[in-house]
Image (cartoon, rainbow, N blue to C red; front, top):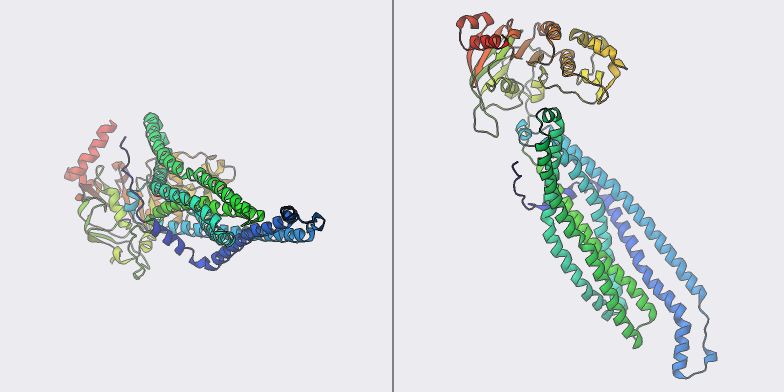
Length: 608
């Protein structure tokens, strides 16, 4: 199994965060309010130790007076040993008000930030959804579905959680850090310098760990996308995996991808998890240092006991933000890595803007002209269609036949403008499709492919997909025409039955449903890519009769592998290596005894 390419370091984490903040501009007032709440709540919390210091001094004042009288040998009867309970009560009430207000402000800040971050996540998901419809088909040829889903879900969720946690945490922690530093200097310079010296170690450790863990967060997000892509691929092709006994190979590759994800996740989390215990050690070291220096200062009479009590709390307010800042920076790293993946998707090259194109088809006759069409896929230098020219007259049934790889499906994809031509032109009723908007081109066609597509919803919703004005009579007539009416009658709720894992549809029934959908859409032209390949012969004859009725007075393009199904075609185009080598009716081509006759006879030889 080929290992994935070597991971690169994140290219522009700072740029990703600038882009993320640009999404927040419309919520500027909300963010300012949240930041004011965070700062206000932190300031009130910081004022608490100062009040506690006053309370401690009031409580210890009688003991200090007694100590002073004993040292001076004075009259102890004059010493007042009563504690000022009114002052203690007043300070206690003030502290309760401070802490309740701080809690209320924190709750308000948390609610506002949760609302803003969810709005930003919603906008990101919406932008990704919009972007998906603007990307060319070549993008999906080189990107797995699971990786795209991972960006919509995991990466956007990571961004939302990080925005919610990191921004408010950083503001609160920085306010707490700076506020504690100012109040510590106001109380005593020497104890403040002691706390700073002990905490500098924490800053050094934090930035060293951040520098080493940054690349692993990016690898973790990319590896998660690969795991999701593999799971989605194996789940979608589960029957094939089982049929070819590919479970072992699939599991081995999953184990490899899972192990790669584990290693990158382990390295990222292991390094980042070192911050908490290291910051705890730094905080405890700060407590010890402050207690030692503070004790010496108390013995010298430079400060009171209340100052030590306040200072111990200030040291906690000073060292605790270091750990919180480290966690916030870790969260920002993860969000930056996820943001880089999301924005790389949003910055992918889109299909050219067509808002200036105004050409439209009013009454479509169905004249389709291919003139020297040349095409090769965007991510390849190989030319698939070399020099294709043909004319489909209104109402004709055009069959496109040829061996595998001849360019049959590619040709109809070009007709639908799923890809752009390298040369030549395709015209509908004389109007080049390159001069029309893609939506205008798509509006002219119904398309039924070999691969059926159904979504989880009611049977009715699947039938009238993008044909909301379809009547009940039209729905029933289409289902009856393709032989689906008996199946509908067996469903518990008829057309209102939800198609999910509890409703088992065979591949043939799915094909009948998609054909009925095309009949209900009732577009001017049809594209059928072996539309009856998954049904039995009896059902095929019934569907073919309904399709013949539907194709009356409509230009139809039929990709056929079973040549017996296109004998009545008005024009058969025989493709070989991207070129039309023969064209004509069934009888004319057999009479020529050329490549078509060889294909036709080989099918009968195989059946014999």
